[in-house]
Image (cartoon, rainbow, N blue to C red; front, side, top):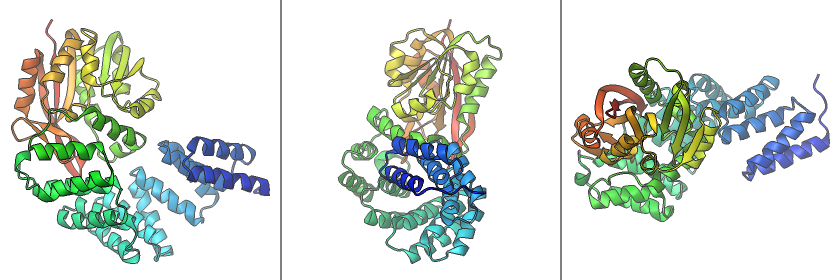
Length: 443
């Protein structure tokens, strides 16, 4: 039997929700937990604490709490809707889609239900359905950015880039400072206009889009970086530290969730490469996880390590890595600067998906060579390019031709051990080819 909820407790719940709405998550969390200590199964408190945990990057904990609330009140519309949103965000779209579909049937005039259903369908690869459902959301609420964004993303995933550009323009007209829409619009324009070399872009419309983004969001690091590259007509040697740091600080809370949606295989591929070179270990090696991010590689690196050090530019990502409890030390630093100060310090250096932010690899590989002990092993991934050299993409990331990688290794003094090709993730539901490279410093 449910216990009666006192008016005082309900008032406290409203105060917690107000703190939540203001974005004061720590205070709201404290209040929700105090309420649940007095009334452990209060549905509303379970529900809103679950939403807060999800918003704060604690996705599994948030989902568990919302599921508990749903189990206690399975007919509550708001709980079911937020459960669908959480499942969508966590890319559990096989579960989210029927829930979203049921909500559409229940309240067909609610555009948000159609928007959420479109997101689930797109993530399931059902692009035609996702486009049709998003168009219905837009028809119901043409002044809401969320419906247009769902439509633009569905069109982009389906390869209808010209139509996607038009839809992103609608989003920006409604939400002029919404950077994700600016970024997606600029990427779509680059994809439409790219003819193979950065200097040959038909740049007028793309340049205009990047300049507008900077006007609406002054100093946005990605916009500034890409605009400079386009205006100069050549790719910079690497992505600036400020761009990488700002991008990943903003990305940290959702990084693990997003990476799961990309069928991300780079960590396991590097794990296999290292195991092939070092099949046995006594856990007595000095190991560096360069560009460690949230610590996705810590689990397979830890068994090799007497000392496992992670280094990353993003303090927010390092906070997530700290939560793994697997690192002996975590350092906020630019990778090349860190390596230059650690001569002959490491038996293993693993760079998983970090060299995608470098164009010319010669300098960073030379720094890695100096930081390795004699006979030390370097293993890294890069995106593979079919064009010579190093190539900057609309995403702001670089891809490398295999010959460029081999040449950079030779200049660095590292001896190439193996270079293989594999799909490292998907992007826009298409496979992204990568190179998995291992090399040694000579004895």
